[in-house]
Each structure stands twice: as structure tokens, then as C-alpha cells.
Image (cartoon, rainbow, N blue to C red):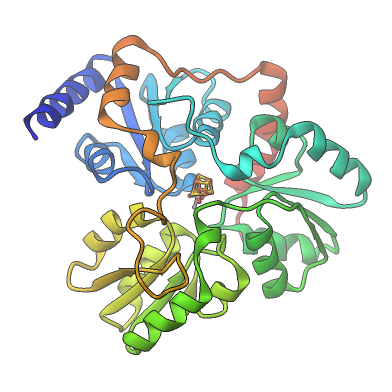
Amino acid sequence: PAEDEARIDDIKRLLKVHNAVLVAHYYTDDAIQQLAEETGGCVADSLEMARFGARHDADTLVVAGVRFMGETAKILSPEKRVLMPTLEATCSLDIGCPADEFSAFCDAHSDRTVVVYANTSAAVKARADWVVTSSIAVEVIEHLQARGEKILWAPDKHLGGFIQRKTGADMVLWDGACIVHEEFKAKGLEDLKALYPEAAVLVHPESPASVVALADVVGSTSQLIKSAKELASNKLIVATDRGIFFKMQQAVPEKTLFEAPTAGTGATCKSCAHCPWMAMNVLDNLAGALRDGSGEIFVDDTLRAKALKPLERMLNFQR
Ligand code: CIZ
Ligand code: SF4
């Protein structure tokens, strides 16, 4: 629509005026991902968003995603202004892991190396030895396991369980989950596979173990997009937020993508597999943030210094 066009032009102009760059997550709306691409920003998973933001020489980073992604950007680039379209966009994993309860859990397992998923608050990261994203979680745990370390993992129990089964590492798990991925249902997926026996199944490891068990490929968003290209199959059933279809379809224009079922019936659901917090990022509040500097992220200095260490371990990790 013409209104969107005008808004998009406005955002492009404001990005230049403020020497700002747009960093968008794969799960945001297509219009936002497209805008990030067209303006020299990036569309990525949380690991690549962090890397891109830290390396870029813009004065302002506009992070379209959820709160922890903006906080991570600020922790890594304190000298930059970090804006988000909305500060209300959070994550069920972050909400489900309050810093005080988490700290008590760590105290109760003081013999363990604390590894937290990036989807956590700065305060939780500050208590951790390592931060990981799903792109490198398995590698980091294998590395720690090889050093004989026992692991405390938080907050996603499905991702933690997946890593535990894959590596056999000694892990205690915090009881958190992603409200989007937790909704994928094995029964519905089996029914869809029966309809399209030639289709390959791609699953994000935040999904329940019963769904992961049906996968041909299990991986982070960036790994799933890579696999979509490599797999021989021309039909792909995808169990992750359907925001990923924008970049995945670009990567494999000739392939047919199916949303994995969330209702257990085999029918695809048009509104389930999409994160309500990612969806709060729209052109309107993105333009607003750039126009009046609203949605700025601040992280307390002491907290920042503590959270930086485990984040840097992640970014510097080489296998
Ligand atoms: O589910 C999320 O929020 C993901 C996949 C984050 C990430 O690491 O990109
Ligand atoms: Fe959090 Fe799940 Fe939304 Fe990702 S998709 S931000 S893990 S609630």
C-alpha cells in the first residue's frame, strides 16, 4: 500500500540522517527484513546480529527483534546508540528466567559451568560463564565436556535436552520454553509427512523432543536456511517461526515450503507459528524510534561489564 511505501521512504531517509543501520531477525515481518536488506543492514539469527552490530561503524543500531537482542547489541557496543521499534517485545524464555531465581539455582549447583542461551536478560547473562546461541550451542558444550566440566543450562529445556541427547554431557536444565516452538506437534507432523513422503523435515531445537525426533535436519535458523539449499528434496516442512520463510524462500525459490503443524491435526495453522513479540516490530514504530529516539536501550554499567565476558567468550569461540 501507498502508506507503507511512504513509511519505507521515511525510514530510509531517517537511517541516513542518523547514520543508523537496521539489524533485523529472521522472525520479523517480511517488510522489515526487506528494508534491512535494501539499506545495507542485515537479516540474521541472534549470533550474526550481534556480530554485525558490533563490527558496523554506524552511530546508531536499530535492532528489530526482541529485547535481549537489543541488550546484547548495547553490551557489545556501548558507544553506539541502540534503538528498538518497541521495548515491549520480550521472549517467553527471558520472562521465564528471572535473575534472582536463576542466581539461586546457580548457587545450588556451584560446581557447574553456567551456560545460558542468548535469549536471556543482561542480568542473567551477568551470572553466566558462557552465553551461546543455537548456532554454536552444541560445539560449546562439546568443548566444555571435553574439559571435564559439568553444565548448568538455562533457560530452554528443549534445546538443553537436545544438546544433552546429542553430546551425552552432564547437564542440569532450567525449566523454560519458547511459546512458539513448543506448539509444534509430532502427530500433525507425522500426518503431513504421510501426505508428502518426499518432503524433508527441518526442525529448530527449541521444539519438543517428539518433533525433533521426526527431523531430517535439526538446527538454528541460519543452519536451517543453509540446509534448505543443500537438501535434495524439493519439498520442505519447516518447524520454526514462519518469519523464516522470507529468507528461506529467497534461498530456494524453486522449492515448496510447508509450515509444520501446530494443532496436532495435520492442518497448517496460519497464526500459531509466529512469535507475538517479534510481530510487535512494525514499520510504524520503527519509523517512530528513528524519528524521536524512542525505544533506546540502556544497560547498567556494572551489569554490562559482567555480561560482556560470557558474550565475548561466545564471539571469540573457535573450535
Ligand atoms: O527463537 C529465537 O528467538 C531464535 C532462534 C533466536 C536466534 O538465536 O536467532
Ligand atoms: Fe522467544 Fe520463542 Fe519468540 Fe524466539 S520465537 S523470541 S525464543 S518466544
